[in-house]
Length: 395
Image (cartoon, rainbow, N blue to C red; front, side, top):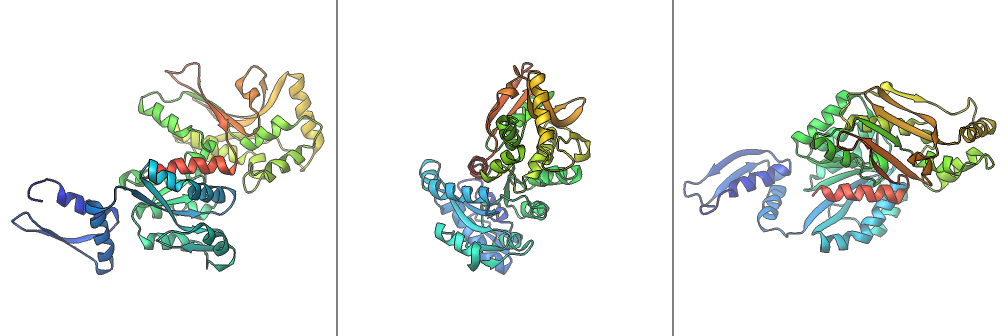
């Protein structure tokens, strides 16, 4: 300490990162020792934090907690178990899944879970899960470098993000709800993340693993905020409309998309345009607009009764007469924000979208002809890969 600066600061910062309050500090006049007083129940964790700071391995560990054990959650855990040894060697990052829950049960272990523990625990052996208990236990465990990955579409979990961030736990999420609630909550959540120096990452809110949100942020940092955005944001709807030819019933193709894991847990969230509305709202906010859900103009293309094949066949025939293609398009510009079904001209890039691909075109001062991002925008593995990118950024 006497011969190098910053040792005391490193010690206090290491303790502070664990969300441990220091009650008193004393430093000897010889500059060879420094003492800190913490609560008795925080002492062991404080010692671990200081030891890791000065003598720990260069390998950085992420303690990961996952909410949701559906298509995305299962894909995420499978990818982590298959890739984590490679990350340790190549990136110096060790990812340990320390907890996971579904809607009924949960399992936690601060030393990390083995692959064969999870399925059995969440089906019958795990601790019963009730609203909030999983998050409360994560906060109570207070593990360093903790990351909470939300693979659900749960409203109540989204409302707990603030508590998680205040506990200095990073949040990575494909759940769109938090970023589409009122602007007051949106601003509060983002301010807390900045003030607590805690990552809050949600690239997968819009286009699975496609780098759309980070691209908009890079543009804004350069003073080049997009002036207009055109987007086809639903991999599900793009799949359905690229497959629909007026012969196979529309609802059959919707069922096919759902069985392949391309749709939201409730496929009507996709078909109704609700999911696209949320993605559009998030993009508008990323572009700097203060906008509420009610200000997004949407138009439903669904018939009064579901299913009604004649309705969809007439939409298809109309698009053929206009020599175009049916696409559900979002538009963001200074005139407002809207999303709805359109007949896109065949020469437009959106008409060439196939399968579950999505496409976003950003127009700005530096890119007057548009900057296009396109690729798979639906599917458990695609979304999981996007979550992994965000998780690895949290070190």
